[in-house]
Structure formats: structure tokens, C-alpha cells
Length: 140
Image (cartoon, rainbow, N blue to C red; front, side, top):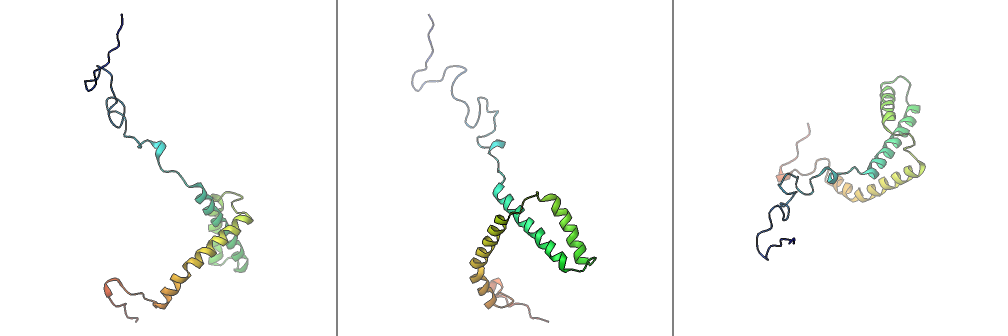
């Protein structure tokens, strides 16, 4: 006849059994809960796509600027270098007409939100008051 051992309520657990140690497997060898790589920070793919969209818009703007600049000038040479480097990093098709429209709308909304703050800064003058009441440096 085989009997299963069950401890009396409040008694010690049977040998070799019982609940695992807090924060891991029996023996305490596992890392604490929530520290596995599966719970690490994840990349925000929407922000990445939006960033690529904006960089693509910048590339389009640089292309427009190149048509206005004299060939071989220092600025046109730098723009050409930047466009070559950025063109390798920004995936093809990163800029769509709808994406451009959305980005422009977002920038316009942010500008409208910042307008009262910018107006307040302009009324303070070129040198806003220093913390602690120190006077701004005198020009000259």
C-alpha cells in the first residue's frame, strides 16, 4: 500500500518538495523576475519610420537647394557629400506624398503650440533673466 505524504497544516514541507525560492527556481540560481532579455526596451518602429520620412524630406530639400547653388561651391560640395551618405542610410521609398503632408501638418501644429512661448521669449529681449537675479552681460 502506498501512501502520499501530506504535511499537516502549518507543518514543514515534505523533503525535496515545496515552493521554489522567491524570485527564481529552487536553489536560487535563476535571475530575478522581469530581468530577462525578453522584457528589455523595444525599438519604437513608428518613430523610426517618421524619422526616416523627415530625413527623406531633408534630402529632397537639399536637392532643391543644389539647383540654386553654383556648382563646385563649398556649400554644394558639402550638400552632395551629405546626400550621398544619407542616401545610403535612408531606405528607398521612405518619402511618400502622404508622409510629407503628415509631417508638414505635425510641424505646423508644433509651431502653433510653441508660438505663445516664443512670443514671451521675444518680449524678454535677447537675454532672458539669469537665474538668481544676475544681470545679463553688457554688450561690448
